[in-house]
Image (tube, rainbow, N blue to C red; front, top):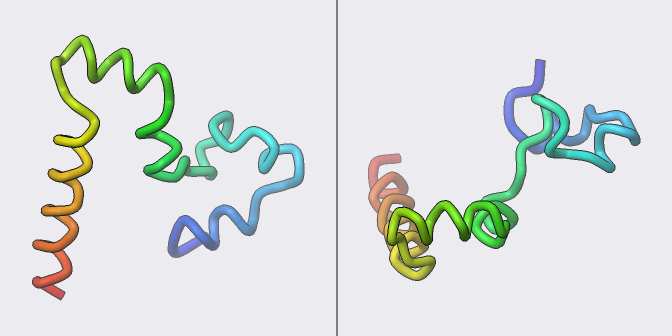
Length: 68
């Protein structure tokens, strides 16, 4: 069993790697998610701005990094 997403990605078959969103083992990159049109539509419907979400993520990452 893979310990992290990099290991999981390396274990994908060629067919799975071509369609990473179609498998439970593949995990999309956060940047891919933030640039996805469906995510943009959802964010717009919730009145969430891209820059605000990115700022929140960066703040959370910094806080978590301080705990390690």
